[in-house]
Image 1 (cartoon, rainbow, N blue to C red):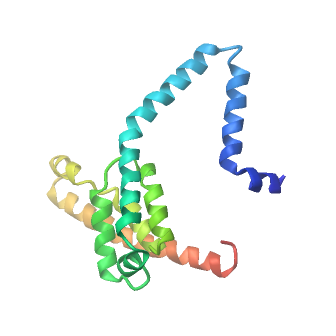
Image 2 (tube, rainbow, N blue to C red):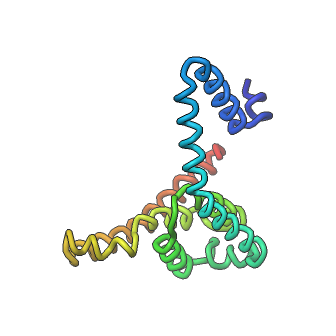
Image 3 (cartoon, helix red, strand yellow):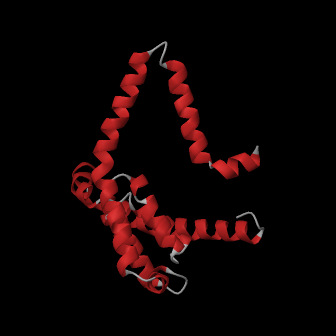
Length: 174
């Protein structure tokens, strides 16, 4: 069974399973299947522009940015510059988080450290357009302290993730 999973791939098995479920439900509740498919198409069309932008960024990254540059700015020797890029990138990034996964995966394959991937994802919680509203409702002091803590904890979170992954690799589990 495991060899079959490895040969076919879990994503294809999931797709086949979903098609089987739809085929089983359709004769009894076609309205549910139609609503589900319609909902999927609406969501897909809504995220398509952002998905296209992310894939365009991946294309441009592959075209113009060499792996050694990524390794220099976001690799093992990156230091404070890597953190500044990660924090700023996470804060200014927009769109659904799952659309950033392909780009981050591509950058990771080119030498981006796990610590910066985790930091980027954590910093997506800091949203510049929402800061004035947060300051209005909770006060400027609270907003500043929370934002600074979120940035600090993004660094700690990244370090913890990298340490855990290092320990896992060391044991030979990854």
